Image (tube, rainbow, N blue to C red):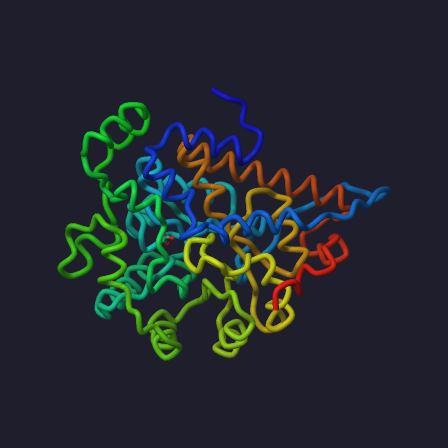
Length: 387
Ligand code: GLV
C-alpha cells in the first residue's frame, strides 16, 4: 500500500483500482480539455503572502454554508456515477462527509438513490437536481428529496445539453458497464472493484430507473441527456422549481457576472460559480478567474461558492481569500473513493483540512473568516487578462 500524503496520491491509486472507463469519466474535460486544465493551472498562478510572528494557537476552519455549520467550508459536490467508482459509492461518500462535518450533495445521476442515502445517514444531505422534460418526474423527485429531509436543493443550470467528452465515447461508458471482452480484461486487473460490485445490487442510476416513466434501460449517459433533459430550462421554470421545493436553493453553474446578478435578483440562497469541472463549455475561463468579478457584483446579496479545480487546502484558501463563502470538491474526493472507498473519502477530507489549516497558519490567519485579498499575491492582470 503506497503512502498517501496528497490528493494526487489518491488519484494514482484510483487510476489503478477502478475500471478505466470510470476513472476516465472523472478525469475528463469536454473537447480539447482547455478549461479543465485552466481550472487547476489558474489556481497555481495565485501566490500566497507569508506572515510571521503571529500567535497561531486556537485556529479554526469552522464556518457556515447557507446557515449550516461546517467543519470547513468544503462541501462534497454532486458527481455522477460515484457508485461505479466503488460499490455503493454515494453511501460511502455521504457517511464520510457526515462524520467529518461537511455537506454531502447527491447527484441526480447517482447510482445509490435519495432513499439509500437517507437510510444510511442521519444528518440531512443536499440534493442536486437536473431538470428533465418529464415534469411529473421532476415534481416527484423534488418530493422524494423533501421526504428524505434534504436540507438544500442544488439546481444545475449548465448541463441541459452534454459537452462531448471524447474518452467516454471511446470507452463506451455505461452504467452498468457492458460485459464486452475489452471490459472483462480491464476488470480482471481490478479484483477489489469486482468483489465490491458483486456484493451490491446497485449497478444503475438509482434515482431514475424505476422512477422515470419509460426509462428502465438507462445505460448511455449521452443518449439519456439528449432524450430526457429539458433544453428549454429558463428563469420561469427555475422559479417553478423553487416554488415546488420551498427550501434553501443553490444555483449551480453560474460563471458570468450578468447571470450572477440575475441569480441574486432571483433570490437564490447561494450561487455556485462553476464551469462543471471543465466538462461543459470548453473555452470558458476557469472558475477561480471569474470569481472576483462575481463576488464584487453579488457577494453582498447572496453566498458565493466555487467549484472546479480545487485539489488542495491551498486552493480552498485561495478561493476563500478571493471572496468565496464556501467551496465544493468533486474529483478530489472521488479519487479517494475510487482508491479506498469510504476511508479514501475521509483521507481526502483530512488532507484538504490539514493543508488548509497549516497554510492558514503560515499566512498568519486563525480563522477562515479572516482570510481575504490581503493574503494573496495575484498576477497584475489576473482578473483583466481576458475581456
Ligand atoms: C455530469 O454531471 C457530468 O458532468 O458527467
